[in-house]
Image 1: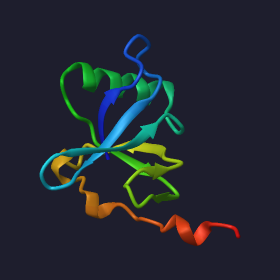
Image 2: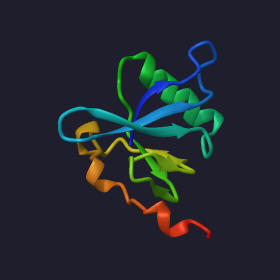
Image 3: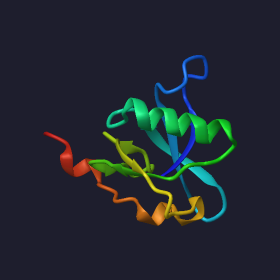
Image 4: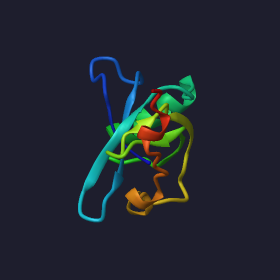
Length: 102
C-alpha cells in the first residue's frame, strides 16, 4: 500500500490514508493506525513531510467489492518496493453477500 497522507494534519502520526494504483491513478482504499509504533509513525511523518509516498505492508481481512480494506493493520514500511508496484490487482476481495445472515 502507498501511504498518501496523514489524516489528522493538526496532529501528525495519528492515522494514515493508504492507496494503491489502478493503472491510471492512485485510488484510496482505507486508513491505518493499528500496528503502528511511535518509531514507525515518526518515520512515516518524516517521509510524508519530505514529499515522499512511502510504501507499507498492510495486513487486512479482506477488501470489499468497492476496494475498501476491512480491518487494515500496518505491518512495516517497505523500502524495497516503489509506489507504482502497489496495484489494485494485489487486493484480495471478498463478496460480503456471502457473509449476510438471513
